[in-house]
Amino acid sequence: MPVLKPSLLLTLIIFVASTLKSQVSTLGRVVTESQEPLSDVQILSLKSDSMVLTNKYGFFEVLVQHKEEFRAKKKGYIPVNFQITEGENVKLQLYKDVNLSYQGGLEEFYKFMGKSIAYPESAKRAGKSGLVYVTFQVDTSGHLINIRAPEGSDKHFSKEVVRVLGKLPKTFSPVRSNLTFILPVQFRLNGLKVPQVPAVSLPAGKMLHELVISLHTRTEFYKIP
Image (tube, rainbow, N blue to C red; front, side):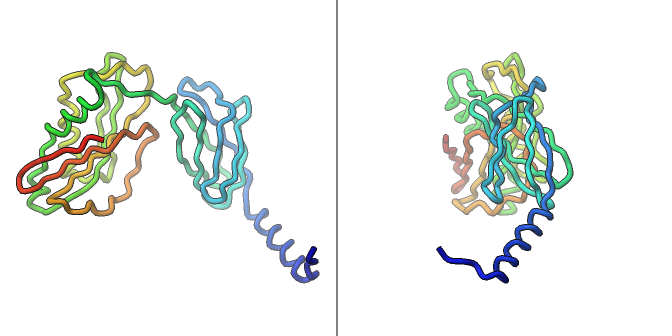
């Protein structure tokens, strides 16, 4: 077994000590929608791949250097990515996973959206393609509420998606939760590759399959996921 030279060993000890010293112990807690503590949630560091579990009271402790990205996940719940800044405690809320169900099936929902969304004239004139995210919730009667486009979304496209979502002829199965659903819609002009999407802040929620609206020589197509 190789033996480290004293000088190299001392350097290694100093490096480890300085690294640990620069990391700050930070507390967090994970709860359900009803504010009940959630145990055995995996808290994964996206930087180091280290992992800790929440205790029976929903608490966890991690070492953070400046600001780091983490992911909270537990079977049966929708995973959430979040940031922790050293020294600042964090509280997370996880929602139970919900299978969205539409009258006639989700394919019927995507067909209606694909046929009803018009490629915006302003985007045609500007030769624009793009990808937008629109969020919504489903109330206890199955109707959509709080239909929004995150700040920073391309208004050429998001306004049209919001308009069509507000005119759905059928309802979803009731959702007894404040869970947010996120619908990505890609607009392609004459097969052009969609440019990189500006960073938008998306709320915690369930990501739905992407809908693609293509415009080829004045004929609109839609692609069902």
